Amino acid sequence: MCQALGLDTAAYSDAYVLGWADGDIDLVKQCAQTVLRVAKQILTDLTPAQTDSDPDADNLAELGEPAGLDLAAA
Image (tube, rainbow, N blue to C red; front, side, top):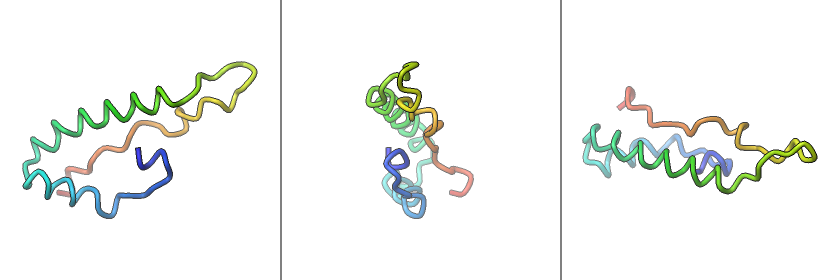
């Protein structure tokens, strides 16, 4: 969601989430699946459908897939 709004949270998000999960990578993975699914649905619901008369309406494609946590760096 932050990425879609142009906010770069990479510098602190991973450490925050790992701290919240008390270092439990499995818990992080489980929660990340839910968070990414919900965030993608919110972005889909908020993005107008592209029409022939408005080719710029579908900006969801520009966002790509939500960025996941870099668990390898943990």
